Length: 163
Image (cartoon, rainbow, N blue to C red; front, side, top):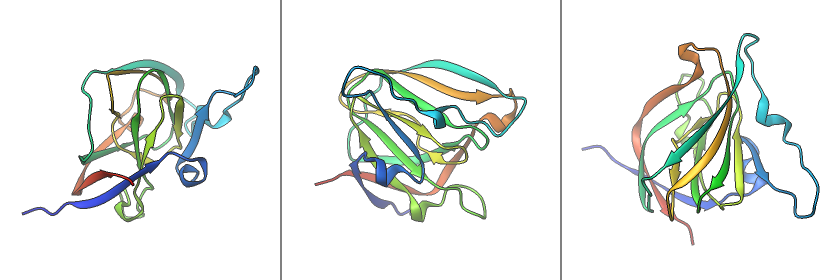
């Protein structure tokens, strides 16, 4: 029988998320904030890609995570358009391949928070809480298999609500 490891989901905060990417929030006052890491590519032949993603299925905690994905050569940015809270689950790339599950972190994002996953950072596919959601997604593509990679986790992870 396959075991499941428990991970406590914590609030999404800049310092804790920094090793994996950048949090995007609108400025509190009138004006503009720039997020330069939201558009990084390590492939000269790749082109910027903007898509819209709609999630109708609403997750709840606890949630069992069985799969992760990465974009080895591109950042990927999720900008909420219409959403409630949503999950951000990340892990660095392990030197022997795949996500390093020992360094996995799980966060719950507020409706006003977007994220940029840095290139080569593993992340769980989009999972929304509270209600269906729509996001703008920005990344770089070159039309090859290296645009995105999905793997099943060796050990499922149960994501639990924090205190």
